[in-house]
Image (tube, rainbow, N blue to C red; front, side, top):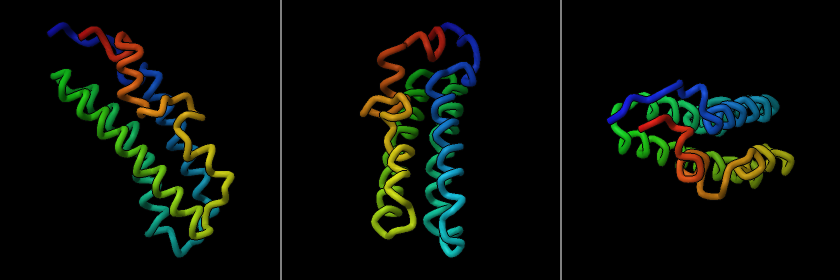
Length: 128
């Protein structure tokens, strides 16, 4: 295996996932205080899981492990989307949060940020 170049911080998908996490934190600041340890916490954990899994996978020595972490990040996106839909349905999140909910609005494809970025721009993950 050839050695990786650069850092996970150089990955466009990691930068976009970080932006998503920050946007989620901003959107949930106005949620009811009684949800702080409920849905608010779950949404924030899901959002921060995306860039964290991309970074953790990048640090793995085996390409297959990295791809597995990218799939986990993709799952976290689906979890986040579902939680935001629940928040909309129960009335704590306005429809305006749909810009946060939709990965495509942040430049992601419908298949999830990590896996699609790898498939479309393989040089972005390093020279493996």
